Every structure is written in C-alpha cells, then in structure tokens.
Length: 227
Image (cartoon, rainbow, N blue to C red; front, top):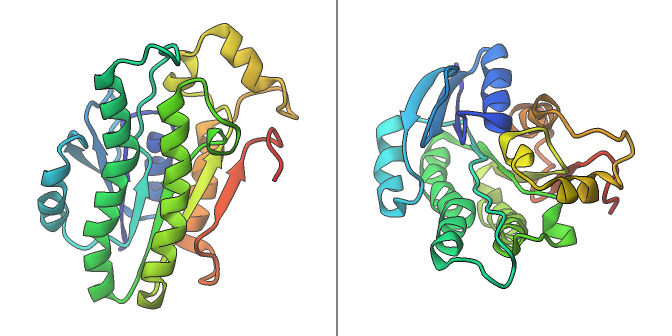
C-alpha cells in the first residue's frame, strides 16, 4: 500500500485530498495544526512554523510515496498595514515549510526509486492578490515547483502543482463580500470550485499522471484566468 502525506488535511482542500487518496486505498498521513471532527488516516498534529523540526518528523513517519503541500494561511489585512507577525507566518507556512518538506521527503524518495510531490498554489500567483504576501508566496511556490522538478527529475521524482481559483473553503468564506464578488466575476460557471474538484486534480498528479508530466502547474480555476 502506498503512503501519502497531506498537509493542512484538517479541513477544506486538504481534507478532500485525504478522502480521495483514502478512497483509492492509499495509506493517508493527515497533518495539520488543528483538526475538526473528521480525520482521515493517521492524525499528525504539527505546526509547520517549526521549520527545524520538519526533518525529524519526516524521518519518524517512514516511507512516503507522495507529498501534498496544501497547508497555507491567509490574512485579510490592508496592504499598507500588514503586521510583521502575519508576514512571518505566511512566509513560513506557505513557502518555507513546503520547501523544507520537499527537501526532507525527497531524501527517502530517492532511496525508494522515486516519488511524487504536488503543491497547492493559487490563481493569485498569476493575478496578484489583495493579501500581498499570500499572493507572493503562492507565486514563489510555483517557481519552487519548477526548480525542484529539474533538481529531482533524474531521481524519478515528479514535482507539480495545482493553481485553484476561488474554492469553497473556510479561507474563502472569511473573505469580505466585495472580494468574493471580485474573484467570482470572471469564473465561467458563476460558482466557487468545490474542494473535491481540486482534490481530483491533485490525485491525478500525485498518483496517475504520466512520468513526463513534471514541473507544471494545472489550473483549476473555472476559466477565471486562462493562460
């Protein structure tokens, strides 16, 4: 049985991803700082801001076939008055932790003969975002995906990303109505994406896509930002 590690698996897209892999008979390691009532597979309570503890955590978890970097934070601060602690947390959780996880997990994947890594970006990586550092970290995460795909490709490790548009999650619900109207204005269907729809794309990249698909970003945005 193959094993997937999903970060931010306590809710939203991460929970949907955990459910999808579990339904396909994968062993699921669900990592989050806080969990709600539903936990899929093994519960791993961990705060990704503790970057230096990530390598030891990965060593303890054992072989991992697929890593899904989903955990992220967003604050609705005005662009000209973002608290420094919010900036630091966004940088740590959205960018530095995924990089550290890739570094740590890829060591085991090399010895296993390969693996897959999928990171969850955002349409904001291409369009900008009112939460300055959220959009900046998502753009950097997609660049990180390309860099690691090149670095790990000869080790049979495929590194890809998805870039969801507005998705019906707690993060989306916390947005001001004016921001929801703005992001929904260009979506062809006129509705937010469902977490399950993003999960389907992540599962394809994390389990089924051809080996020649690496270093790419799959848009799951309802046509809101055609590229």
